[in-house]
Length: 163
Figure 1: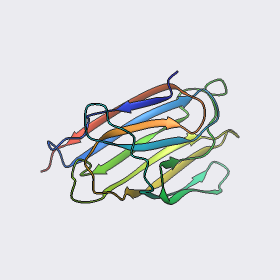
Figure 2: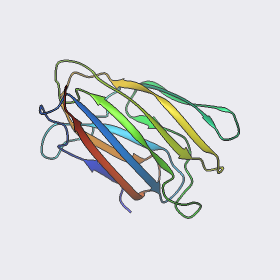
Figure 3: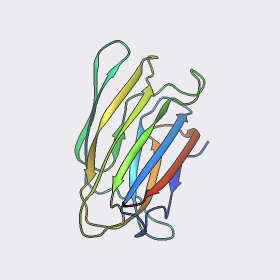
Figure 4: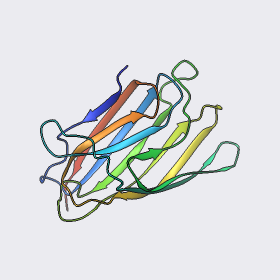
């Protein structure tokens, strides 16, 4: 039961590309919010209006689902999760691929897939991507919910070797 899961100092010049694999559950109904974080020992959350993204998907009822934004202060992935008392862990899981997050000479692009169990019980699957439109070196990511706390989380960041 924490407000956020911080993966600090996971991006470096060692790798150009990174893969985040995660699964989470909240204490209440909420949306997963992903913040890129600046480099350093105790980085501050990057909250400028620099997030742009589009994720499209389907739910188990056959309906279209979307999550998108432009010039926002955070990235919202999914909508209205079940809380940990209403279903089995995880309620939100997936992966995100980051392209050169440590570079300070270009924007930070990302893409990925994820699923969530909605507050109505539907399972929703999304695919898409976006960018953090800022030429600043980022040191990590922050996973949190728009409301309530993170109840369970397993998150791993992998550096990918260029070949």
